[in-house]
Length: 280
Image 1 (cartoon, one colour):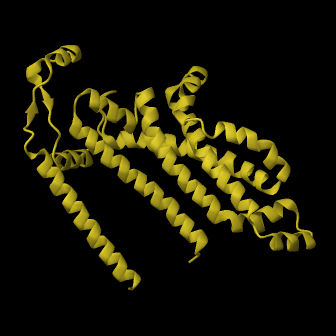
Image 2 (cartoon, rainbow, N blue to C red; image 1 turned 90 degrees about the horizontal axis):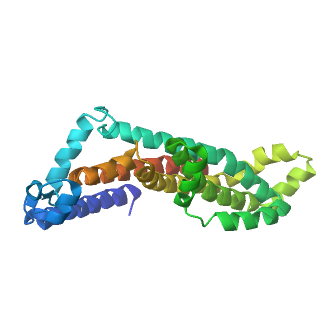
Image 3 (tube, rainbow, N blue to C red; image 1 turned 180 degrees about the vertical axis):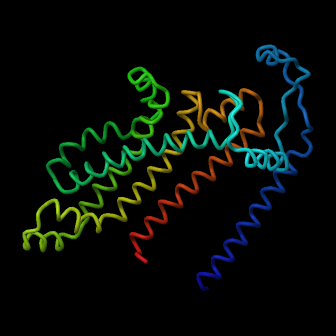
């Protein structure tokens, strides 16, 4: 089976699976009705009347119409709690980019140091093993207390969660460089810095980029949760705000957009990895 034939068949299967999912979704919500009666006590708690009701689970047509509405006007700004999804996504992507780039600047040099020096590898390993399992969101209260800025605190959390996959993969890739190449470089009296850039970096680049690809996925996951906590702006805040407004259609729309942006970020890093592994 040729590569193009396999790609075509895979695309056909994907379309069929998507169509089956949409049909099942449509049939599943078809009989729920347009409005469900709210519990009177819950309505009183939310400051609503029972007749205002709570929207039933929307169908694919409702979500599609709402998605098209957002795509047509992605950058409108009607105040603090009413901004277009384009603006919200831009805030989230900017925070992810800032925290991610900071992590690149820290993780790759330290990863090189660990991979090239058995002494530093053993010395830093206890710190890495203790800090790595801590949930990034566990740092949020401390960040808010010390930084006192919700946006910068979210960037700090992205930095923390992006750091470990890049650092560990960089250290592994550097340590795995073939010893024969390093021995030849030493024989030719190639300096440490030049050896790192001309021999070690090209050899370890695929492993480093794999770590970067893992990190960008984790960062995009974490920013949504972080923005739900800190509020203000961002796609995570948008999801939480729409839930508070009982707009399930907007929540599902935002979830779809989060998935699409995450896929695009992963595709960019995957493309870079392929270019390094198989140069064109």
